[in-house]
Length: 350
Image 1 (cartoon, rainbow, N blue to C red):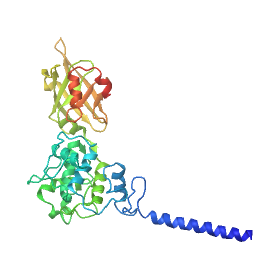
Image 2 (cartoon, rainbow, N blue to C red):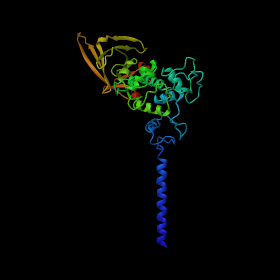
Image 3 (cartoon, rainbow, N blue to C red):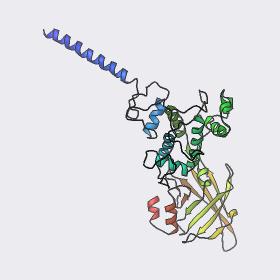
Image 4 (cartoon, one colour):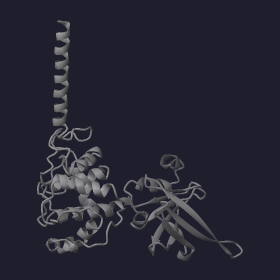
């Protein structure tokens, strides 16, 4: 009797294990990991890894906790929200109503206002934004390039082959050709498939393009420095310095002008351009500024300082000097306080 019970128990346990394994196999047909809980995203789908990436980075979310809707067309409101999240969800300067069809207080309101004021995307000629309108692929690529320029991001070319070699290249609108070329040569669009420039973009395709962009883009020091003026804070001399970069030659040495700013914010002295030069080294993430300094004896000597770029958006030298790109939206208050000779600034931004 005991032996019979053992056999029955074994059979029961084996049955439970087999059923459990079957359930696991069925469940694992769909992505249900910690970052992709969606029941409509299969593990064997071409877009699963892309959905996982944008979900993990909190760039894109589902309609709810279990629905991503990968094959739905993405709307203009969704697109601007994606880029707004990538930018860190900055507060727009205008918190009011920026388009007639964009009311305040909606999940996309701040994103639309931010995108408009930074010229990443605008409205229609009618004055409306088209919140729920679907977006076509060539327009999305144009917005993506605008976002890259806004952030000073670069992506190295993966190929020199033109998109014009694609079978449907003739369908690309003239205004979109430079943006499609940029994206195609960087493996963002059209690799292994048609360009389909005027087809509506799906949420899965959006996740794919965003992932390809975000995992290969890097911050270009050249764009950071040339996109606007920079402020240099010298720890050995109290005044702030306003550095205006210009005449950049790729891979070479450019000239710069140094204006000494008094406490009132007025330029009181200027260094001749030929005495101040800079060069950029993208590999070491540094900018070198060379000063030609005069002496009482009428002779000159050069002194070069290396400024290392930190991910907080500020360049620092080994001796504590700070170079702040003024085109960064969060730097205005720092610049104002530098001019006001606030000594506690250094401890805050180091």
